[in-house]
Image 1: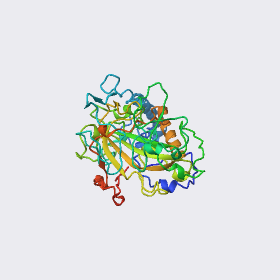
Image 2 (image 1 turned 90 degrees about the vertical axis):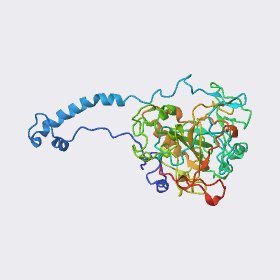
Image 3 (image 1 turned 135 degrees about the vertical axis):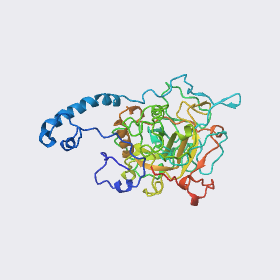
Image 4 (image 1 turned 60 degrees about the vertical axis):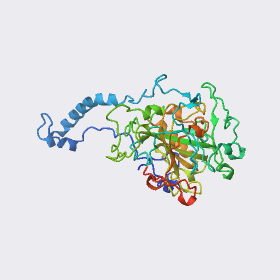
Length: 432
């Protein structure tokens, strides 16, 4: 597991020791840049053309071979400079447009995402044949291909984040610039309306100190507010450009479908992803595409700094304070769809079913953690500048559109029986 140097925090940052326990997705970084062969390497070549006596001719041989290597490598470099995932999102009319959720009392849409993930809640009535991944997404052969976040929580977890909390003004900063979304009867957001709907909030804000609520000098993220609740999503895919510089994509559809139809896409056993020979994954899309989700309240406090949010959900049982003591280990798995404000309980997404893994707890996160993530996003090969701000939240999905296949994950993917007993807290046994 790798952390890149955090340029926004001091070298002797008090949270570095704490952050080291955060388990994250294996770093699928850019492959090392090829270098010309060193003089020592030249001596090891079995064939060096007309060279006789390697040691005596290194001064001449090295420039010649390096020039030839650069020339031979030029076509490969040109291919690498082209984004292989660009345009992979299906176009309008290709069968993935939004659609009426229910027509003539018949549910037309696949199960939707953004429902109730409270421990033990199992009121979803959408009868789905799909099964969610119950290992980690990495173990299922997926890599993260994007990260983005929503203003407020799209999911509901009783006592943690909920629209009921949003109705209490004390649970967050002023919403003068937001449109507080109503639980029911909301009109579909017009694409040109410019409205950003606020989802559910956590209840940490009233307990924050004055210093924790202070404004932060954002250098990379846009339209962020200290004290606000955000739900972060990490789309994953077996079909991503894993372990290449094109792994992270915008739109995320390009990333999750990048290698669709290619026999050579990574799948299990490649780049440390998945288990070789394992056939326990769900069939179809839920076994190939998944999303991790985690909810945070942003604070101006470096105690809650995590250096590598780009890589996936934060997983630790040694975080600071009560809110972060256990992170990413109380997870609900289910199958759903894509989210966003172009969908609600009338207009549904056609992208699904895919696996969702949602952390049911709300955590604190430093503003600098988000800003570092935005910087990392801007450093990617694909242009991710349109994802460095919060997107609006989808209306909380009704039980009618929520799948009946949720699984409250316990150790090694075991089900926790939905008892709601704190003593049986779920553990997302994640080797991220």
